[in-house]
Image (tube, rainbow, N blue to C red; front, side, top):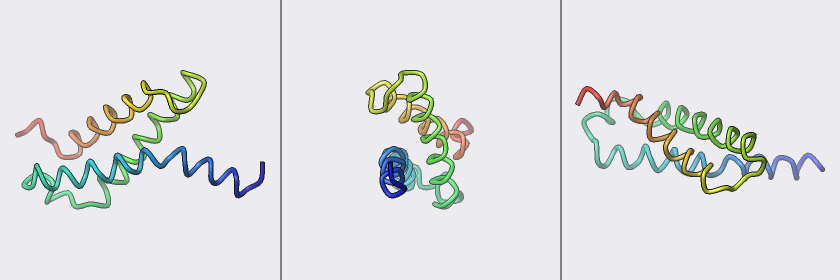
Length: 92
């Protein structure tokens, strides 16, 4: 496998995590303005992206292949939990 092809595989593997991270932070700025305004954009996107990549990698290791719906459900659940923790939403 060439370097360019390997880079393509890695980027395609991480693309769902990036999309979920960006959309989650954008929607939190729309629906939870008071909490999300103080946190900014860059740090929550980066945190959610890393958490999402870990969830995707765990799904790949545990299930043996990429692209299972259970893995994507775990990605959404993990990113939602990390966003909840970043915003400290339990405080109301």
